[in-house]
Image (cartoon, rainbow, N blue to C red; front, side, top):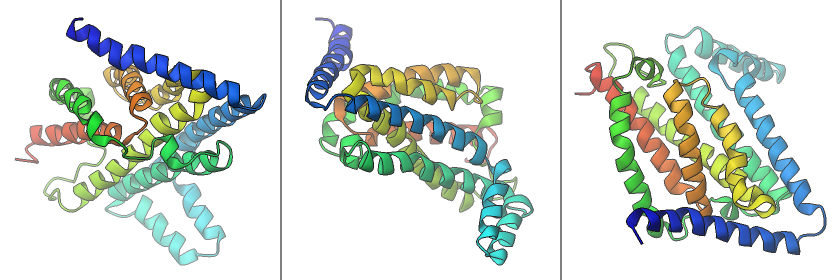
Length: 279
């Protein structure tokens, strides 16, 4: 068997067959209609999550948050928030903090709430675990190495340089502390994102639709990339399929989150390096 065929057999065929076998066993054991209810709730929660991100998670739309704090009678706090998000000299940084924290909370809500009360599964069964992490490290390192030439090439593209990094310190400002604080929040956002897409959606739907849960997850995942440069939007299809299949195989999202962040911080630093901000 050729190396490529071995990779295909191990990471595609075997993953598909195992997921289908687990799904068949789950469908046979579940009460009638139970898995249909679970799938409906998971899919609707994914749609609501996408709506929340689009209409409430952008810094330019953060007025609702200020108003909500004001309704609680915390006038002083709401005034400070309004200033920080819309008037302060650091409003760009503060807005990105809002963006990241909102996503960490929203992406984590469905796995925690629906995973516990509807799917009746622990976070570990939805990918939040490190069991056997050494066994899967190698394939993620290979993927990172394969991605780096594409990342370097993208860093020269005007569309990518206009998009990234999401927070670039003003001219004359050191990368420390704000840029690195932002990257820490960026990492947290990727962990939550991977848990939502490759954990909650993939493993939350696996019992009902088997390996096809990866394709169901792919729709909303690609949707969040539609405001990005076209090559990245197209690439999100491949990335979603690969990371989804790896999550099915490993049962964990840790390495997927670190791979995702590794690629993201690499392009951030490369773009800044082109502008003479790193070296």
